[in-house]
Image (cartoon, rainbow, N blue to C red; front, side):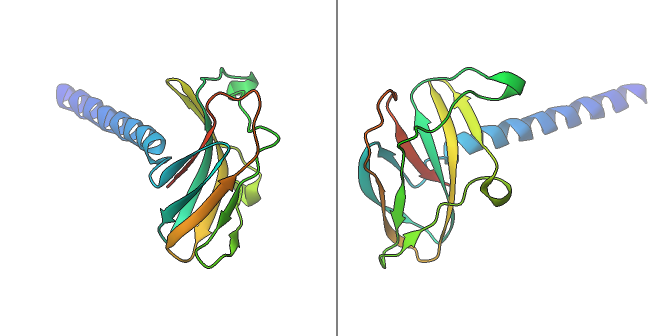
Length: 146
């Protein structure tokens, strides 16, 4: 009886760990589902209707700051505009409650910062532009995904 209980607990623990690992890896994979825009630049990317995330990435792994925070920020000169197929500018809403949150992550050779998300009301080709030069950055790009 005790052995069966221990085996059940270990299996439940492994299933929970597998789910957490899957969720974390899926988040990294989904960041560029719709496209990548090297900065500075402009591109036309087909976006589906619904919520789409805009993530800033550099090709450097940033160490943690205080209180388990990642010491990585978007450059001051970064300005992103997204225009719908009908010519309407879409608002990028920051992460978290009323845009006051922060979502950062690192991986092998990169650091990411979620700039926010947009609500795409009409599927189709959207123009994404970030024309400013960003001195001091390492291979900056925008990832457009889920």
